[in-house]
Length: 239
Ligand SMILES: Nc1ncnc2c1ncn2[C@@H]1O[C@H](COP(=O)(O)OP(=O)(O)OP(=O)(O)O)[C@@H](O)[C@H]1O
Image 1 (cartoon, rainbow, N blue to C red):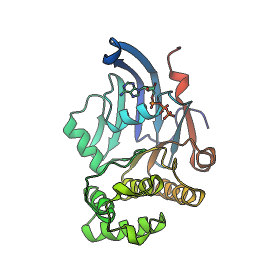
Image 2: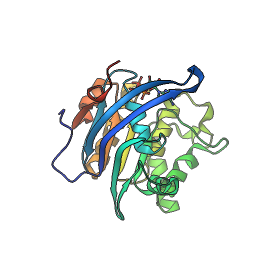
Image 3: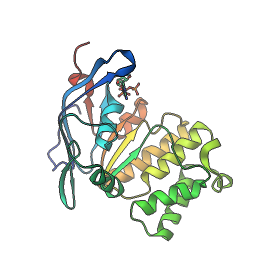
Image 4: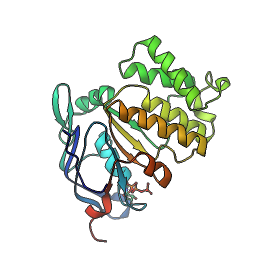
C-alpha cells in the first residue's frame, strides 16, 4: 500500500513537485517543505497522504487545488478536454476545473454570510452542474445522512458547532459528481457515528470511479478507506 502508482490510467499525476515558503515577516527566511514529490491517483483509488504534522500534506493538497502556486514540477489532471498542468494553468482554467473536475473538502467551512445551510449545499451542487431540483434534493439527502438536524437547514451555518460546520462542509464538497476529490481531514471534528457516515460517502464516491486524495489523521478512517499511502516525508528536505 505504499507504492506511488497503480496500473490504471491516472487521473492525477503529481511529478517532481517541490514547495518552499518565504517568510517575509522573518527577514525573508526560506522554509523548504516538499522536494520532488511524485505520485499518481487513478479512478477508484483513495490515495492517502501520510507524514507527521507539518510535513506538508495540506500544502500539497492546496497546490493540487490551485490555492498554492506550484513553482517546480507538474500537476497534470486528465479531463474530458485533455490534460491540464495546474502548475502552469491560467487562473480562469483552474476555476473551470474546480467547477467540473476537482472537488475539495477543506478543514474549515468558509461561506457567504446569511445564506441558509440548505442553499449553501444546493448552490455547490448547481455550481457543479446539477439541475436546481436535483441539487436541492441531493442537498437534503446529504444533510440527512450526515445527521444535520432539519431545524438548522434554514439557518446560516456561521454559528454552528465545529462538527456541524464540518458536516455541512462535507455535504458541500461531495454533492457534485466530480472525478477528482481532495479531502483535507474531513472527519477531524466528528463523532464515531458521523465518521462512519463519511467513510461510507467516500466509498460511494470511490465505487462511482472518483480518484480521491486525502489526509486522514484518524487511523481507523485511514485504514477503512485508503487503497495506497504516499508518505510525503520521503520527499521532504532534510531539516
Ligand atoms: N502560507 C504559508 N506560509 C508559510 N508557511 C506555510 C504556509 N503554509 C504552510 N506553511 C508551513 O509549511 C509546513 C507544512 O504545513 P502543512 O499545513 O502543509 O503541514 P501538514 O503536514 O498538513 O500538517 P498537519 O498534519 O499539522 O495539518 C508547516 O511548517 C507550515 O507552517
